[in-house]
Length: 213
Image (cartoon, rainbow, N blue to C red; front, top):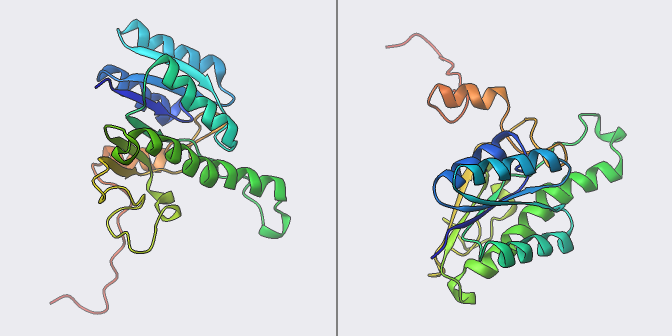
């Protein structure tokens, strides 16, 4: 089975690094972007120069019609997706809640929630053995795991890991960053520092209630 991956928000930052790594490991890669066209095309060319296969596809993951077009383009040009990396994500303006504009809130929810779920839906429809697929993997930032949690599905936030559908779900650390300017989603300096230190995140400070014994 051919290995085909889609990485959203992959024009630069952690998304670009993931796309490059997948390409080096034999995956045909779709480098998705919304605003970073030149960077995404350079990434695709870089993967191709190293002997891999890659295409750069513009799509706003907040729009369902564009998500569908993204996956259909991959179907036609690379093959059926076997790995999805939901990397695209934004924080929105850092302002008081009473000053937050509805359009900014809708953009954050559109990319971080709607985009993540609709991309995963399209992937599951292609990967799941229930739908005639051969399995695959879906990865995303762990901070958004709660968006998928379903009652009665302990151990799986997509509800597809226990049904013999051969879809593996994993979440990876994420935070502030400067990725695709349209769809950011990579860890910032703190996450990189913890990664170099060999741990997943900041250590909790332990407070002593009295003298140690």
